[in-house]
Length: 463
Image 1 (spheres, helix red, strand yellow):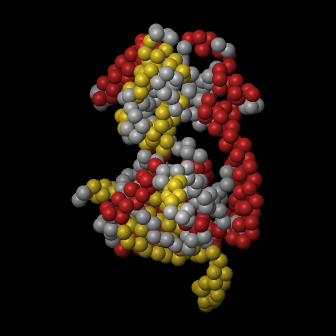
Image 2 (cartoon, one colour; image 1 turned 45 degrees about the vertical axis):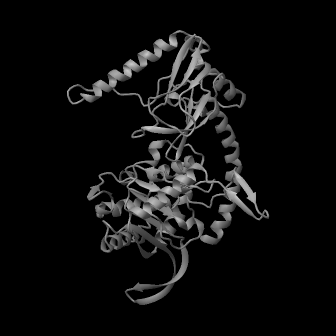
Image 3 (tube, one colour; image 1 turned 90 degrees about the vertical axis):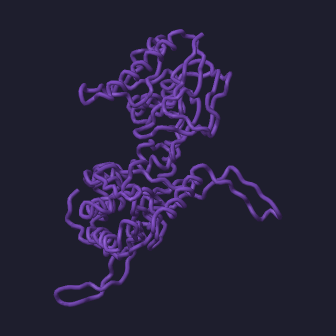
C-alpha cells in the first residue's frame, strides 16, 4: 500500500486559497479515478476537486468552512500502487525546481509552469484501449467517461467541446453527466425562451438582453414559526458574499450618480437589420450587451481616469480595460464575469465573449480568473423593464454603468428645416461613481461620452 497526497490544485492566476465547503468522500470511502473528493469555493466560484488516483480516502486535513492554500495537502488517499509516492515526490520536486527557475527568470529563461496539478495515471489504464484514449486534439478520456459517452451517443468531437474540471482540464464522470443533463434541459429551455422571445420581440421591437429575469430563487433551508405565515430563509454562501461586498462598497466609496438619456434609434435599427445574418454566419445571437461594452471601452480610452482604483491615498491607473457584466443567476444571486482587454476585441469577438461568459455563468462553469481583474462594470437593468437605477460600485473599481430599457417615445428631432416630433428609441444611462476620486465633471462627461457613441452609431456598419 502507498499513500497519495491530494493537493489543493491551482484554480487560476492570483487565486491563492479556497474554502472547503463540502466533502463528497469521507474516510474509509473507496475512490475511483476522477471521482469528486470535495468541493471548494474561491470568492463566488465553486469548484470540484477530483482524485487523479484510485484508492481509499484515509484522512481529511481540512474541515468544512476551513481555508486551504493552493498546494496544501488536503487529503490522504491509500492506493495499491507503490509508484504513487514516487510519482508525486518527483512532481513536487519538479514544481520546486520550476519555482526556483522562475525567481531568476531575468538571467535564465524559465520553463512554462503547468497551470493544473499533473494527474497520476496508472500504466494499466494507459494500455487499456490505448487507440481511443486520445482524440485528435490530444485530450485524455478515462474508460468510464468513454463508456458513458458511447451509451449516450456522444462522439469524440462532442466530448472535445465539454469543459473539464478534472486535472489538466480532464472531463470527469460528473462533467459528462452534467453536460448530458444540461444538454437535454437546454434544448427544452431554448424552445421555451424562443417562444417567449418571439412575444417580447413583437412588443419591444426585438430587444434582447443578457440580464434576463432569473427564475424565483429556491431555498433548501426554510423554517416557519409563529402562526405559520412567516418564513425564515437562510442566506446561501453566495448571497452572504454579495451582502458583505455591497455593504463594504457603500462604506468605502462616496457614491454619486449621473444620468443621461440617449437616442439609440440608429443602433436599434442596425441591430434589427444585421441580427439574422449574423446569427446564421457566426452561430451566435448579437444582443445589445456587446454594443454597450464597445461604447464603454471607447469612452474609457478617451477618459482613462475613470479606469482606476484607490489604495489609501494612491490612485492606481489601470492599463488594461477589463469590463465586467453583471449577470443574474437562476438562483436569484448575481455574478460579474469579466471581458479581459475589451478594447482589443471587435464586435464579433465581444459578442462571442459575452455569450460564452453569460451562458457559463448561469450553469456555474466559470473559472476563478473569469470573475477577477475587472476595471469597470456594466449592469443591464433594462432586461427587467427598468428605465434607470443607481447601482452600487463593484469594489475596488470606482464606477459602474446601468443601462435601462429601450422604449419608443415621442421626441424632438432637430433638422436643417426646423424641429419636428418623431417616434424614437430612447434609453437612460446611469453612472454611479466614487466621488473621492471622480468628480461630477468627469463622471458626467464620461456617461455623456458613452451615450454619444451609442447615438452616433453608423447604421451602415458592416460586421
